[in-house]
Length: 98
Image (tube, rainbow, N blue to C red; front, side):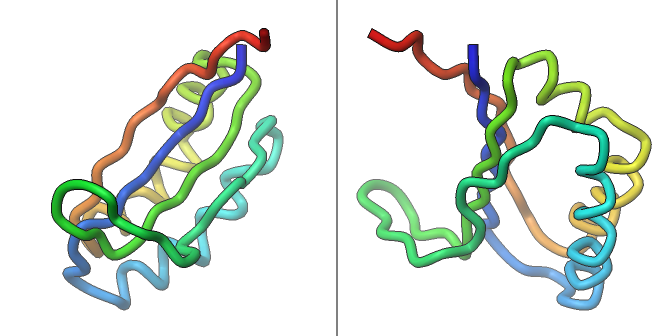
């Protein structure tokens, strides 16, 4: 069943760290079945405090999403994201087609 990684950027701390992350993160996708669906496009906050941006990526399974997230290439890039901004990240499993 499909799974989605969602990253929610709540507050930028260091734009140079984020720029380094954005340079390194695409290479971490190589060899992984990831399909970007949304990345920092216009958003409308319906509930709760507003956020700076949202990224959504699709994977075939929760296991594949976790494998990508835990990969050495992504974790190396992610260190820059951690220093560059306050994010929330989660994996959510999709629903079975009706």
